[in-house]
Length: 266
Image (cartoon, helix red, strand yellow):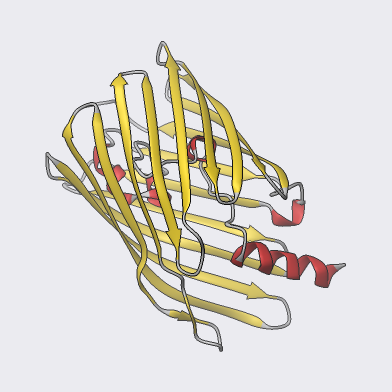
């Protein structure tokens, strides 16, 4: 049974994209134009628009219903510096097999567009076989020349090292997308995602906010076919988000996120 679980972890890591952290983005699917602290994991350029220092924690108790495939992580952004600086980390797996990443991000607002960079340390550990790690770098861009329309892209592992004795190179990922914001409380987004060696995936997301206190979200991606939804509630300086995703083959995955704003808006 334990060998089967290890094998399943490896298969999911390589064949089925792991569910990303941040329940808001998880529910929306298309999130290459991020505007919260989880931009560190989706497109670091989004950090440049944050006005308040934020810290957030997210937890997936059981990917596809298996507690051995739990995932957890945190992100933090410091907004008082000339450039926005962020850190984040996530870990996936259980005592026999674990993998994760630590990220350091910088982002700057150039009025008409944002640029962001990530430096990542990716690591994996298999009990009885040892540990391995490799560095990589991401580049993010968001154009915002028009208030109600934004275009962006992220290149993940643009620069990547090789991991393990087999010297396996980290796969490159690219995502391009747009976000329409016809009203302050409505966002409609779509993007195309491609990972080296895999078919491209189209993603769609819709978010609607009620009185800046409560939000509903829906998302869809076509490869693999996944449907998602979720909600968010704001209370003073705190925000709680919930997301659920249904994979066409592997079933349901739930995620919760708690975010705190550590200051006042300038």
